[in-house]
Amino acid sequence: MRKVFLDTNIILDFLDDKRPHHEDALKLIALLTTHDWQIVISEDMMSTIFYIRKNPKQVLAFYRYVLSHWDVKPYGVGLIKEAVERSIENDLDFEDMLQCLCAKKEGCVMVVTEDQGFVNCGIEVMDYAACLDALHQHP
Image (cartoon, rainbow, N blue to C red; front, side, top):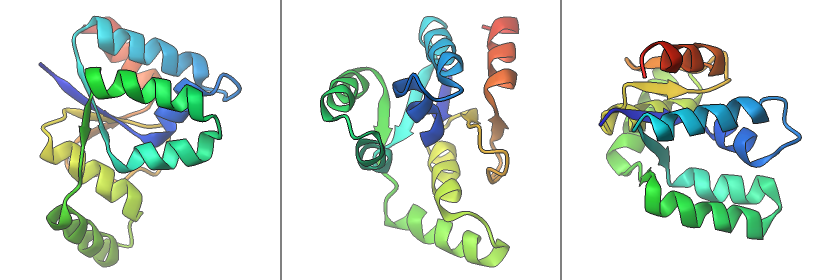
C-alpha cells in the first residue's frame, strides 16, 4: 500500500469549511481513501490541531476516525535530534523538517502541503493541484 504524509495545513483545511482550500482537502482525502492510500500524520499534529480549531467535539470525533483508519506516527528522540541538526545547519524550518523526516522514516512516497517553502528531505512534495492531478492520472 502506498503511503502519503499530510501536512498540518491539509488537516486544518479539511476540518474548517471557511478555509480557502477546504474543498481541495475534501477531494484529496476522498481520493486517497478510495484509491487505497495509507494516510500518515504525526502524533504532535493532534495537539496542534486541537488547540487551533477550538472545536473540541468536532476534532475529537475526527480523531476517533483517524486513529482507526490512518497511521499516526511519533517522531522519537533520534528523529528530533536529526531535525534539529539539519535545521540549524541549513537554516530550515524545524516543523517542516520533522514532518519530512517522519514521512521518510515511515516510507511515504510524498508529502502533501500548501506550504510553498516546505523543506526537501528526499521525498516528493506536492500541493493540492499537483497531487489531485497525479491521483486522477494514476490512481
